[in-house]
View 1 (cartoon, helix red, strand yellow):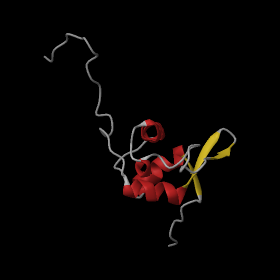
View 2 (cartoon, one colour; view 1 turned 180 degrees about the horizontal axis):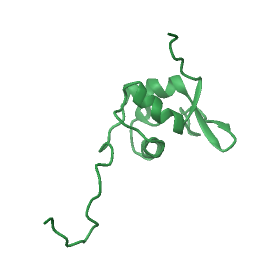
View 3 (cartoon, helix red, strand yellow; view 1 turned 135 degrees about the horizontal axis):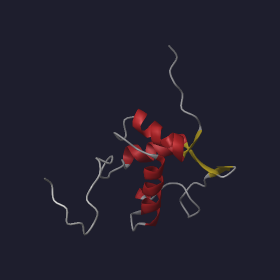
Length: 105
């Protein structure tokens, strides 16, 4: 059986499943990865902890393929190994709407 080789560049959509496959998170969606990139890009984090892709000094530019932003796979994996994803995890089901007064039976 041949070993699966990761692509040189990857989209947010494909990166989400790659992150799970590499064991860096138990679950990840493309939307969750984009949110993490946005938060880590705009947060007041030390420079080395900021999202590694973008247009700012110290960031690697995204490769644009049509309307899709592509990231260098190895740099993304190295970054996430050093600064792993954290969050609440997957959605666990419906919750009561804010301000609702319904109580369980």
